Image (cartoon, rainbow, N blue to C red; front, side, top):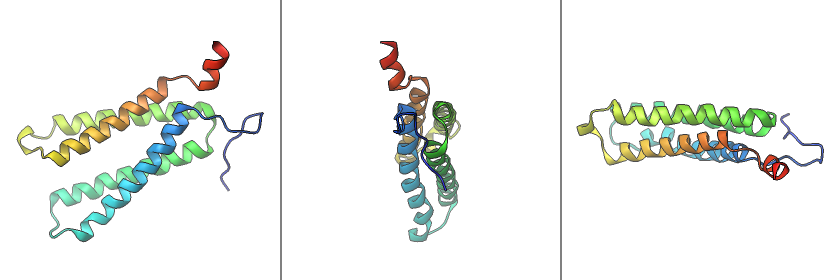
Length: 139
């Protein structure tokens, strides 16, 4: 059974990286589930629908990883995983904008890429921000 890691005081320390992992996991779990269900309500199945299923699968894998690490991993792992996920998502978002022909970009594609880049930037910010308890000790 998974248990939340606790500190010596009995309470888990809430870091920005930990909150990011919980938020990312929850959001991507919802969005990924909706993405997997969308083809069942589509009028026709085409290449865009197949791409949506692949993207939704990646989101669900990322959600499971983020929730597992945020819940069960030690504190020092949160920042590292948030940074790795953040960097990969920034690269994925930028690549999806650059390598797709600009004339073929729809508004939905641009919004999805912006969403992916935003999640990635938040992950990079979570990776470089020190924990709140460390800022309080250093002050």
